[in-house]
Length: 85
Image (cartoon, rainbow, N blue to C red; front, top):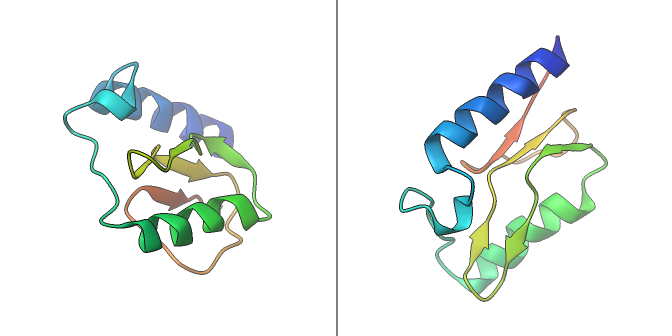
């Protein structure tokens, strides 16, 4: 079931943000360096598998919409989604 859900997320993210989500007019930026670093470390330090996304750009304060395959970290953010099966 997780694989099917991830495939659907890929389709939806492609529809929302296109082939280049960083340059999409609909992709938000993180408000400041402190929050960017905090969120980037959540992605890097999780023990879950990144199923989709995970790319970051500190110069642009941008984090690619990211979906983890398994829930392992304790906070949630609008661009970091945990799939709990």
